[in-house]
Image (cartoon, rainbow, N blue to C red; front, side):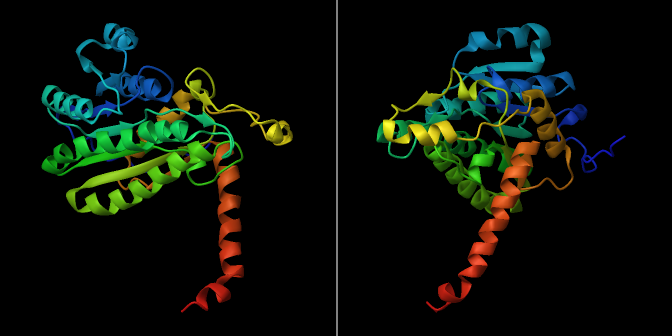
Length: 283
């Protein structure tokens, strides 16, 4: 039997032994899995989606434990209203999960500026809107945990995903600064970096650029992962991180993420070391 890899759990911050969550993109995929996992263990969740009808089943199953809220993360006013409503209705916010996002597929030459701007509008600015709305609540409490759903593509990059990686690399930088800025207020920040997850990320929610024949050979030779993590498994990792006494700033999730990113990170260190003398010559 494997030893439990999770750190010792910290006591819940909310009264009554439960936590309150605010989850974006709760209609399906990982956001839905996180919402369900939190509700199943007795927590309360403000579940957000652009279409409230997608949350009806959750409400039917969990009643008042789930607060359905309409939210398009690209609208900062909606973000402020949704966060304020959640804090007022639930009494506090212990965990904010910025999950809403989608994939953009295409080489750097193929994607249009409009496609990249739309990608950043959701994957980066959407996170900014919700985070900025939540921070006054968390600061007033003197506690809270912001979970940013990044990606292994936020610390590594592959052909055909430059636009998506750009959005997640930007999220990584934003969140690393944020973590240092809010630590003194008792607020934790964690970047969750999954590999492939069995969601609609590559399917219905994805945007694909018009393909240029020049890249057909590259696409044919592209590595296609042999498997993916289930949203439910990734959700359990997020719950364990939230429960930890000392949650990490970053966590790679899934064998594919770990096996791909750690060697790439080591290659970067080796390359930096190899060119260190020349770099230092600039003084």
